[in-house]
Image 1 (cartoon, rainbow, N blue to C red):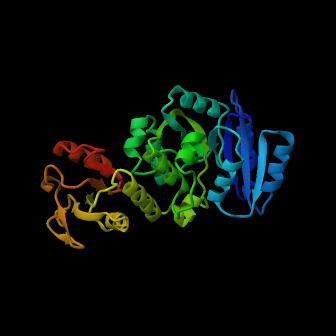
Image 2 (cartoon, one colour; image 1 turned 90 degrees about the horizontal axis):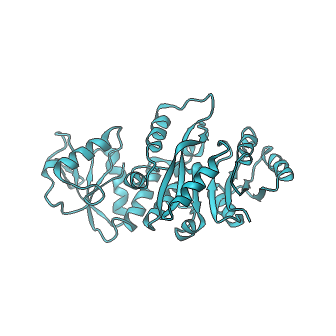
Image 3 (cartoon, helix red, strand yellow; image 1 turned 120 degrees about the vertical axis):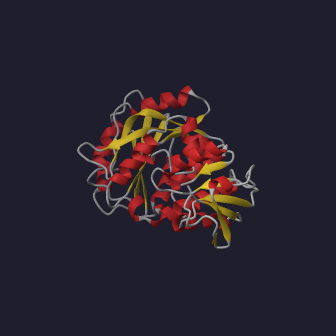
Length: 334
């Protein structure tokens, strides 16, 4: 029985599938299988999968009607034999030591339930500004504490780089179809269950950025979907039993995302902003306070939903100056 099962959902990946499979089959010092789920491909992907499976018994092919990535991942887990589950996409690639290095990190600390890797572009490719900024941000998060600190801001570990214990997966409910990102949903479920995360401090996944990738085209990966996912897990995690919060950021985008908390039964008591044009006014009946005007101690937990570049560190600096403790008084959520 292989120790690691690599979950590989496939839908019409003819141009890149062979490269992805070759890179996985070249892995050294790792006992593994590839569970490739063909999600109703209409191109030559099924033929490519069959050819690889015929010549290498480590490739197992599962077929399903076109049902989407969540169903494909659930199906892959059902057919997986290993007690360790890894991920990769059929348009990415990895160096030969990826699985071995992740296994070593996972084994080095029994408290870890999931480990990722740093990511880089495919050879000869360059990422655009937003994608490059996101990759740089998440590549810098390698320790359990750093990842936990940032987990409510964005997904801090690239999904195709994951390696997790089956125990952590099962204890957290697994992949779910909720109308928001399945990877972020599972990561937050694990976080709420007490699972700790880390990352190999090395680029072990080559991540292909394409204009037609799901994260760019599917509403389940929109900023609003991420905000709904956060609100769902906040209400069942750090805000369980909380009736009111203060929200940093009184701009329209921030307010729209924070309103998902109201749908979870958590009222917004006040907004906090540094814009003198907003301070002292009411927004939807809620006062807008300057940071210095927040009562001490704060009468409610605070969430910083401001997502503009550089805002997180500015808010952290102001909170430190005012004596608010991140993780206790305030969470960075944007």
